[in-house]
Length: 592
Image (cartoon, rainbow, N blue to C red; front, side, top):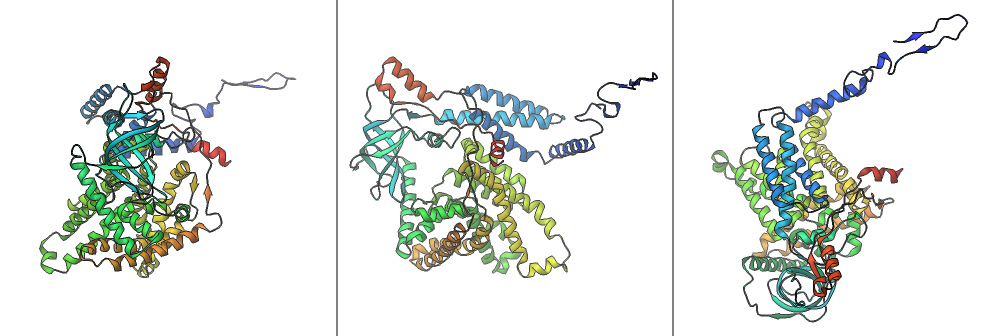
């Protein structure tokens, strides 16, 4: 109780308790007088209840699954695989038993986190292989060539090691990636003998930066280096297997396509056309490559969801239009589903032709889920579709979570799905006689859709591009509006028609048409890149608490050195760990 002094001749005082009565706590998160905070908490509770409702929980499962994978990569020590599996199973069973209880949403999220943690642990245990811990010189190697990359200045190939001369007690590597002079890389599928200088996988250039060694580990590559002598092709002592014959066939197909394109066009136009169709993007000159990334068109060079969507979309609408010309088919048969099946087959062929890298596989899964939804009469572009695609990718390749392409691709797709489901209906929900309808007759709706799509995708990927590549693209929307319609309507369809016309020898005209569209894209790219302020540089965000887990390769090499076991110093089992980051707090401090 508060009391006021009333003695005459004295200064009246006031004594009371804290906090005052009008601001007493009500048992919630904020004082009762703080109406804004209370309304925010109530709104947050409403959102949580809505997301936990029927049909709304699925999109959050891959988020929790990804959190479990992130926990794995930041663990101080390698988890025990069987313990993680048992824990995931127990939590999954508990979530199933609680399916009719109020705790079911929380139980599902916890089970998904445990499942993600266990999946990443088992993926690492399954693909574990020797990794070089110290440089080795003039190492005799022999094995099969599994892959080959043609680059601007040098060529590169992956060798599946069959025999490696190492000192007694040493560990033999399984795969190495070697660089050679341009034009001297052996054919895929051949058995070669050579000598090479081997180096450990490249470590991060700075604490917390991108770890190339981690990517090499998950690709099964234990070392990189370059050939020091002549490469000798000899007869293979054993068969390379079905997978190697398939790789040789697809590499021959890519070489044939590149050769046919080379006969019609050249320069950067030929390199970009080859990159769009076969995934080879290393022959593009440095100025054009830099201009593509400065203007925000760098994603065009890497086969991603955009390319898959264009290929599947063109095939879908072309097949459906051809089938619609036959009246008997339109009235009694599901030509829409047939068209979706044809588009799925085209996307699968495009996946195989482009090399089926992890980023391309992710794009194919997303496209396949959409097409399958069309075939089973489900709504295609939804958050559920995106969630299913994300779960497929994370289960098959949990290491993709820490890769920039995964983060940027799903961020852009999430923004576009939100635009389609929420933004577009509200934007164009108006009477037919309104100004919006009249503008749509002149293409205003299409222009607005393309502008919004470019803006949303650009804003969604900007934080990831700033963090990983230390750059932003201020004029990305402008470059999109000017170049991407030509790429979608001219370049990609011409390339697909060229592939279809190759067996008949009639593909030359389509490569010329493709060159015309690529010329326009290069002109727009260089113009945007030359605008004032086009180069948006970002300082490094900094790093957060570093993982203290010792790298197995370094620990093994140090123990071998202390014990005097010289042969064991060269090779050991190791894998790289990504570093945690502070996120946007450090970036905000730098901007301020």
